[in-house]
Length: 209
Image 1: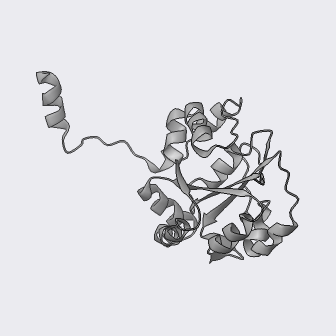
Image 2 (image 1 turned 180 degrees about the vertical axis):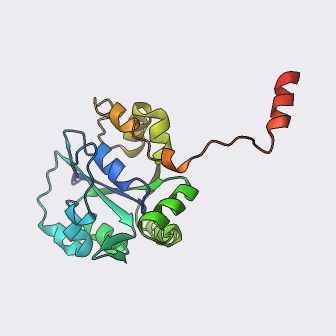
Image 3 (image 1 turned 60 degrees about the vertical axis):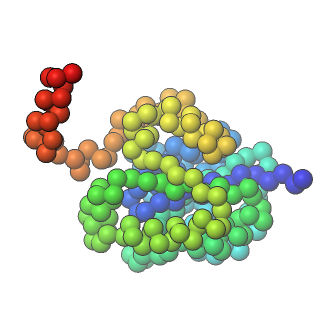
């Protein structure tokens, strides 16, 4: 049986954490990915596989190392020349499977925060557009789900579990992981609630227990 290198495709609605997970999953020494500084951000055109997302046939010209694993990150939609673009999932995956063992991980983030983030940055809510496209992924490649919130809650332990789930090398114990975990960008969207609808009932139940 021919052995192929692994290629992990990270995707998700715009603003769901594509840059974060591209950084986290590129930390391993055996992974070729999208290296960025802790506080860095780059546009999609700087992503290592950006040209192949525009023209998937270019994947045949890549030099694939069987001793390395690869990761590519793309949001749905991504933006080029200030215009939203739908990733060519079918074309990219079909071509990539000729050269690699392809895995797909879809990032999830709290839906209201996605709405607020997309409306703030891109001036419109695009999550539904992404969900429609993800329906097409399921017939192309087995799809895993990963979580923005679970990383910030469980940190290294969550990444360690992803290494097993994805069967992909992840530097889950890297020194910088704790620094990433401190940068929870959900905080700016969250306000403390003074009173909840069921507070009285909960307090009563606690007193009675």
